[in-house]
Image 1: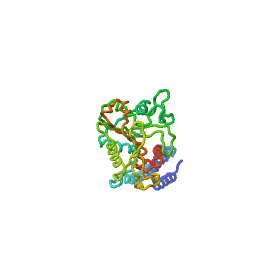
Image 2: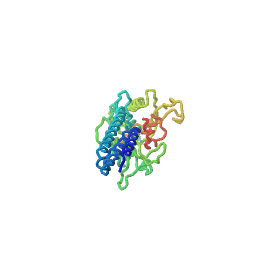
Image 3: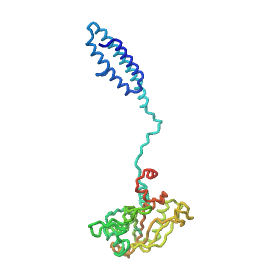
Image 4: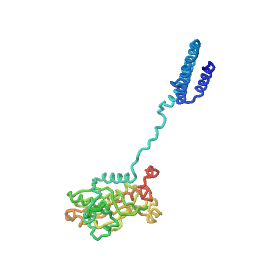
Length: 339
Ligand code: PHE
């Protein structure tokens, strides 16, 4: 049989635990331990049945008193914890907002959009073509004869089991597709992915981006080409940039040239970034070869045109001073977060 001393021992123990308690969670556990359905008080009440009948009213009163006291004490402590968590919930509009790590545009796509904006602001449209091309559009119609080294298996991904089908090695086939369908005049750019069978290193990726440009009209000269590309270079790299054209060769343009911009790091004096040359190559260009016009059914007596093509990764590397192409595809957040 339980004695009255045991009642007060249980009460004392409960009071100490509740007073010492430091969290709302702990308090819930103590409530269950002492006042819960399988708690200490419930147990004492049920043992009361074993005591002599004459003692039961006094025992009942005592246990009810303890129950009331402990309930009051638990309530009191609960409000203390409650008020702490309320304090935490107070909204302070002067605090800086929580940092949300949003996704960002990939640097290559950022440059691609910039190039698009510059040319569309000059009145150029945008044309798209398929990534999977035929030999005809990728090579033949661009005056790249069958024995040309660019057709070599080492440069081109051919699509297995589909004869004459490949992943385009440049965006120039879009020129052919547009010229075949539309009547000049037109000026447009063709952005997109290109593919070449290159082993990945600091300056080669098997998948990369190009922007092609084509302008065909009745009075287009090499001066127009220079003017448009000079304006592009200034908008892209700043008004101080200088440009120069070097003679070059592309089967689909005649004459052909490569355009360099003055090195932004040494301002043309020569430094490691430009291999001491003071100039950096950024694109290939030229006047559309009459042979290409013939393939596309454009009357060479009436129309002339210029074309250019640039690698977007290359522009991004120059603009952001990045020395390794592989950084663009490694998805390292420390790199990507900088743009
Ligand atoms: N298609 C060429 C290349 O991939 C670039 C280019 C386009 C050159 C148009 C001249 C005119 O290298």
